[in-house]
Image (cartoon, rainbow, N blue to C red):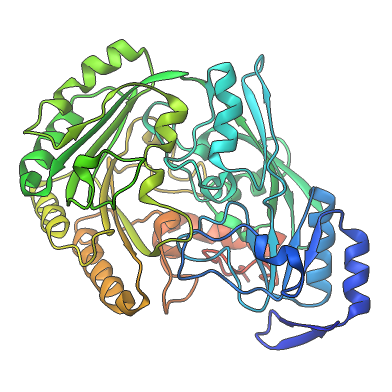
Length: 477
């Protein structure tokens, strides 16, 4: 059998049966072509716009397999996409014609309850990690959707439900094992390859394949105070302004968001919000649940809610509470985000107007309360540079029909642009889509003064830009 695979140069090359068999002999996991029965079972991508049709899939069982796959791809000049959890909204964990390195089999999680650390393999999902850490009443700060991959989320920064008390995922990263473009395995930590450690904390997948992460865990749960209040969109102005006023009073133990969308009927959501445009306010208190419910109470007293599902909730339940908004492989997605110092009246007016004029029911206009521990880290201490803003606004374009692509994408760009004019000039690359745009779009804005240092580190570890299907950093001269 001969397989035609896209190369780094954008042309096709033939990989014959002999080479394929040599690769299979070095891989304990799977080496799949489109004709193989297991090909259809490869973990799907989140964004339905970018399902990907790779000519070759390697599903490694461990780091040794990753090394073999990277060496094979480099020696043959193949275009490679790395799929940790596959939740890239920009479709950067998918590839047509190239080689897909799918880490789904590498989903191990090992907790050290005495040291309060957790080691997580590169293919694990947030839900995999939380399941293990919560057995010991611990949390490794991560994201807000359990189906998200730990790897991609972390490499881009990682904002989640305990961000204001404990910071981003990268602020709790102790070390990582990285297979670089030369096939060498390096430990990245404060003491080992510190330049690489600095770069992977926000610099994305530019520097190699992270096969494992070690995080500092925090004592949170198993039960936390949770707010989930849904309001009619007609009351948007009142809800947004009262939410903003409440947010100005809360301690760092509170992480919160407010957004507008519409959800279809589902057994996982209250019937009162099925197919109803609504404003949702969500919050988590990462300390004593009783105290948290007291602090959250004002959110529950805003207006006349459609439904209120607030209360003490297992942390793993909180982590799945927003899964229904982002079902893998069901939505086409184009997102743009921006940071603002404060939710001023002009910014709120734009957000409310966009919440009421969404071009599709599933578009989600969402605003995250940031600040707290995130802002206690210096802008140059990690590659992730936005350490001043108190808020992030994300315009999440989601829809089903490809015929609506142009309409929704255009609307998202316009809505984002209006808010961005009032922002810090930065954005969150994990919420930064690519459609008819270069993979470098948004990179300069996101990294700011850190970009020059990142380019130099890229030149050290990946001078030929082998890892290029990412929010790509051009290697420095």
